[in-house]
Image 1 (tube, rainbow, N blue to C red):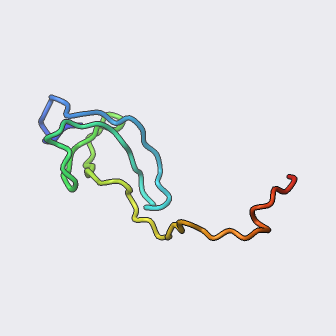
Image 2 (image 1 turned 135 degrees about the vertical axis):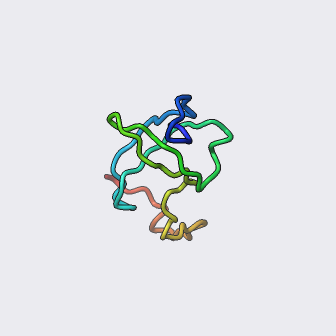
Length: 84
């Protein structure tokens, strides 16, 4: 990955990537230098010999749409051990 079209020095590297069905687009993860890690920054990544623009994003890529229940109440029937 690099920051400018003519730059030769890499700022980081992609460690994994694939299609993200939640965002209906390709997603990738990687490491970049600290100065290039600001969310929203656009970098260039080389994919199959071609440089394409990629954006630095915070995790998670997609905001969670469910609520996690904590301290679920348990009844006596649920606490009994049952055979599988």
